[in-house]
Image 1 (cartoon, rainbow, N blue to C red):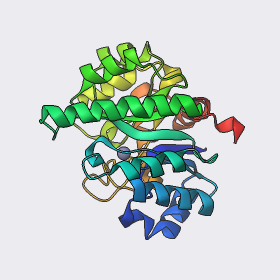
Image 2 (tube, helix red, strand yellow):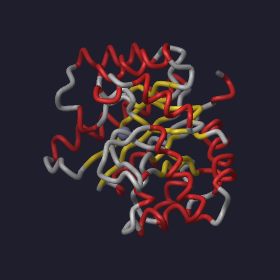
Image 3 (cartoon, rainbow, N blue to C red):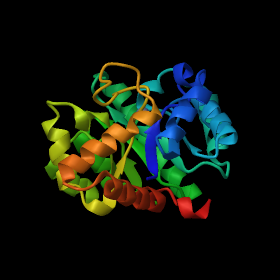
Image 4 (cartoon, rainbow, N blue to C red):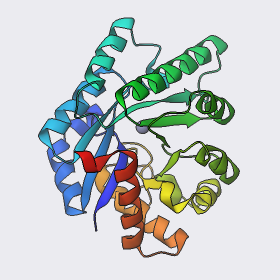
Length: 259
Ligand SMILES: [Zn+2]
């Protein structure tokens, strides 16, 4: 069984320092593909280092909406420069996060940045990995007005089952993670059941959102197997079949066959 972790932060300093042992455990569990999502310039550089060190690691390059405030115009140029390298599989993570950000001016900056990321992804022929929290309507509006030419993934999908249809109609894929394993995660479970089979992929978002039985502890890519197991349970499918479906979907959205 080949497992794909389609959104992970092995470039987070805490994980990056222990990358050899973390990658060894991931390989033991059958993790064959990691999309390493960056969130600022330094994490983008580390994502590229990882792709040189481990053939399973593939960079996504972008500025996370929560990291916009501390990034300078120079960072943008460097980010675009790094994103143009041929090893890069996706742009992101980008998107909107209104959970902590209430200031209208800063929310506007997030929207501008999101559109810039989409345009850049289009110009490079790449898909995007999208972060969206408490901003479903605006995310949908931007995606309607600027529908990515090469697709995108709603990573750590946390909106309703009804919204799945709205995003799916724009060609979006859906990344499900550790939240699926939480007892009280009714919304995420319903969303998975509503998700078209050819649009679902799975992720850890490590070091965040550890699945049960590690909830509350630091997450790492090897734990993605618990997400696949739970998804199989919820979909009434053998874990192997879920892994095969998700692999095919991830290969399609991230153009893996071309690398
Ligand atoms: Zn992330």
